[in-house]
Amino acid sequence: MASLLERVVYRSDAVTPADGPMDLSAIVATSVRNNARRRMTGALALHDGTFVQVLEGEPEALTTLMETISTDERHRNVRVLARWPVQSQLFLGWAMVQVDTRALSQHLAKLMVQTGSGAQVTGVMADLANARLTSLI
Image (cartoon, rainbow, N blue to C red):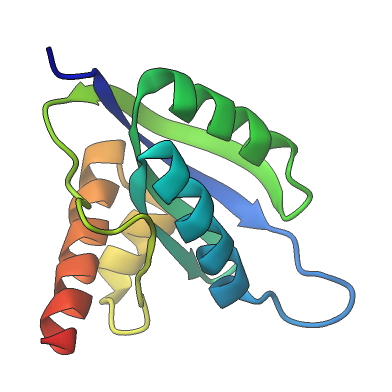
């Protein structure tokens, strides 16, 4: 029997470190190591001071990780947009992918960081991850 999978999507306000700009690549590198161990996948973006992340994995692992994120000093105002069961991981092959939001239209950027539902944000993040994958080929 296959293990249960869930997807969670959240936004949070990034807290800028006192010693300079946030190093998103270091966060992604740590996430890759930790998520691979937990058999989790996902995508992370930082756009105009807002973290947006999609995470996929076993429900217990997601709950534990969301508890960690909610107390992480790099985040403030963690808001879960949606959490739902899924049949498979959308970001399979990416323990964590950092997506580039610089080319997003104003509408899609607003959807990502302000108005979008969990499903809408997941769709944009998946498109950005696929664009990154295509650029690597």
